[in-house]
Length: 58
Image (cartoon, rainbow, N blue to C red; front, side, top):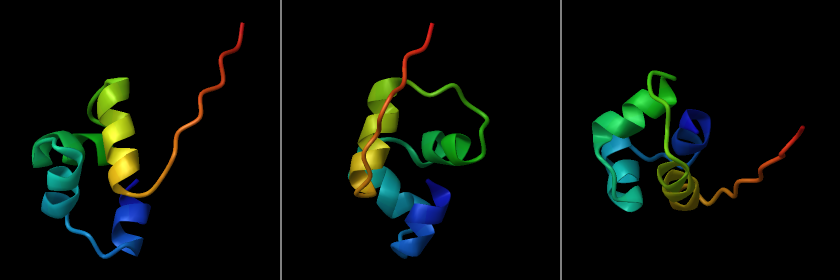
């Protein structure tokens, strides 16, 4: 997500505002320091014009 954010020339603050999350949560997400809830991941993806797909395996 960091690469996409940078491609769009967005700061972490701008992206966090668009996703309605804190800058710290976004930073933790980008740096792999946090287990992220699906709703937060979806919000960030939407803010960056990305979509998510899940593969459920058994």
